[in-house]
View 1 (cartoon, rainbow, N blue to C red):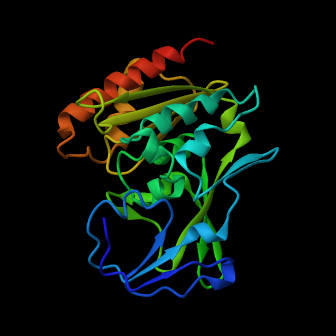
View 2 (cartoon, rainbow, N blue to C red):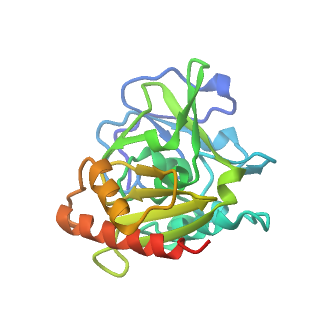
Length: 269
């Protein structure tokens, strides 16, 4: 879609060329959502592609995922053999409501910054204990736990003049056993509930997204019994999401069903 209110497109090649924040600005990465509907408030686009960030970089301690990394690039990542949780990458990439052509352009950072309840990269980053590296156009940096990045539908923790630079996914999280479950009203519909469970030793963590306005991460010191899991979900989920993709009571029931499936899958020693 043509964005006929845009008056300028900036293409900074280094961080020092990032412009001060102004009303009507938007950072442009893949643009799959930005160009999908009218954006009457936009006056200037700041194209991040010219910064040429390395999409993926693996170190001994973490996988660095640039905000401009596409779904296709992330899915093609070849993980070390002991990173058994890397199978979540494929599951979450395929949870995006879009064709392979969309996955070739849509970016990890864009999916996070939209703040969608059903954003699969929100689920991935939260379940793998991700840390968001946030840049300010004035030169400052800050780190934020991925579970705190999305505050609600269309709302993120980004402040004016800030952009998401990368997501750090710790190597230790990739070595945990995990289980993935997703449910929707239709076969190829948007996620109504997307849950990821992980187990490391005796501990158990459940990440709930899509069924809630923002990601919810529930941590157990030991492995929970069925009733304990059910009770913790009802206590720690503040509200259930309500839109055309599912009513709140149905999303709650679906979440409980998928959570119990995950618990059973990971119950083996």
